[in-house]
Length: 126
Image 1: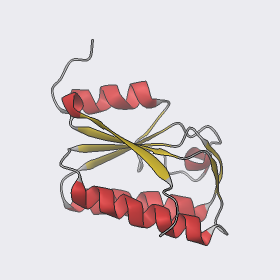
Image 2 (image 1 turned 135 degrees about the vertical axis):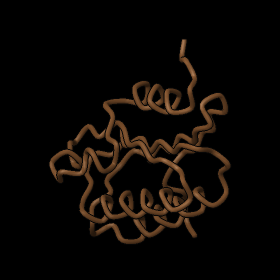
Image 3 (image 1 turned 180 degrees about the vertical axis):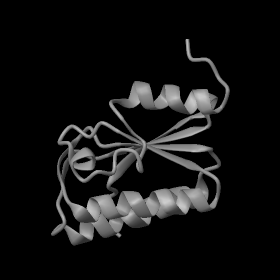
């Protein structure tokens, strides 16, 4: 299957899984990479017993329509099972320029995204 495309960290207090994409380019012509990303996201959805998923794009230096498609599909898969997706760290502005900031629940950074997860769980972050 090749190398993984992301780092994963469980944040148990907030019932959240942080998925950080490995730094690099995720352009639409990078089909093998994006196919692996899609498969990994689906696998994480099936195996993780959490309520929220944060996808951190901080290391992404270039993205395209296929990356957006992976994220939108992942969001739809999560909604079906009552889970929530929050995206953060879109430093290149891909999501906002595509008009998907509201749909993908785009937050400025991981801290803000985590606070939103905690608030959804009724937790107070100190």
